[in-house]
Length: 146
Ligand SMILES: CC(C)(COP(=O)(O)OP(=O)(O)OC[C@H]1O[C@@H](n2cnc3c(N)ncnc32)[C@H](O)[C@@H]1OP(=O)(O)O)[C@@H](O)C(=O)NCCC(=O)NCCS
Image (tube, rainbow, N blue to C red; front, top):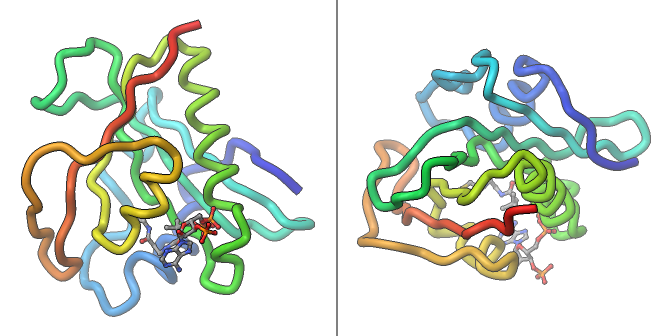
């Protein structure tokens, strides 16, 4: 039980099921295999049930030099609402804070805004559309530097 670093391809099954069902977009993201990209998984017993990836990537909205983008945050449907996604994302934030990351940002689906707001993320800018997926906002949080 808990969070582990996983291989890029280990995220694909959950991304496909949770983020790409009836959505004809790739489940593999550019940068998945870059050396500064990290993939995290939450395990219950030996089953991978939630995934999140972070990539070194800057958004024009922000001036910080050490920015990371969160991608592919997803929990298997039958494990949602059990605080697993929150625990996973909190560990991811702690991990990159220890690596002097200053800011974490991502494109958030409207449906997931409450989840991210509870963890202290804020929206910035106007709503925008991603083909096949729908409305999104950029969300971000400044990280504590250790
Ligand atoms: C968003 C998501 C990753 C959250 O993971 P999770 O493991 O369910 O997260 P938690 O159990 O820690 O949830 C915390 C809060 O998120 C919200 N939440 C959880 N599951 C949700 C769901 N299925 N739909 C809407 N909100 C949900 C609730 O507000 C919950 O707070 P509460 O438990 O006090 O009610 C997960 O619901 C998911 O995979 N959703 C589908 C894919 C998706 O939208 N990913 C985000 C892309 S930007």
